[in-house]
Length: 298
Image 1 (tube, rainbow, N blue to C red):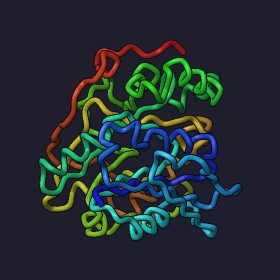
Image 2 (image 1 turned 30 degrees about the vertical axis):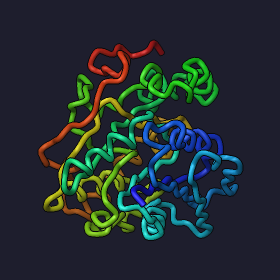
Image 3 (image 1 turned 90 degrees about the vertical axis):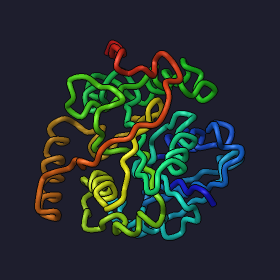
Image 4 (image 1 turned 120 degrees about the vertical axis):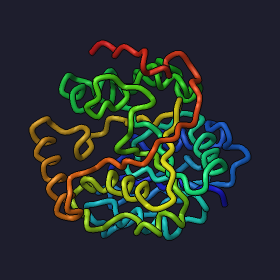
């Protein structure tokens, strides 16, 4: 099998059906001929996740963890151990929508490089970065209206018209900014386990900096090649997440705790890898030229 997509979900009954639509054979450009699987892990949701009827065009398996840890680290490792694909696609936050060429361009990297670690850029759905827009009234109803307006999923690349790239403190966002995290991260299954998988010492709710840590360790490993996709993205749906959609003060307090835990575990505060960057992709629409984008009015 070529690819295993691992999607971690907690209380995402609204979001997961759309996530699966973006992983469907009829949506992804190489989906029809690709030998792949999708493993959705319900990481102890208070109300068990149901995906009935969602698997007609998606080769999906649902794994429920009843006694789940607050962190998704264990869920990622359990799913990776069950995965049959040579390549893993890790979606630690299951509330994301991919653009249609993510699978195609990511897998091209595995044909071009020996040990690539491939990241799709992180976007927020909506007119700005969600930690701010949710305070201004952006909510699930507004998001539903945006998706209806762009005729999604029939027009997958129109996500660029209604999303905002995670800036990460950069004054200007382009496809060539170095990424520090991705919610759509590809590496071989062998490489995932060679670097130790997801570190279950990251035990805080949501995982803290688990995702950033895995990305950096995977890149820093000897022989790994850092590949960032151009013209493809992973778009975060609003859902009341642990940090992304929380109130400003609470979010800052959580981030401070995450930094403290990371420093205690790693002995430093450096979250960025310094591996040379490789870029692979295309610009499928005018709206995908994010260096030209003006933010949507709030």
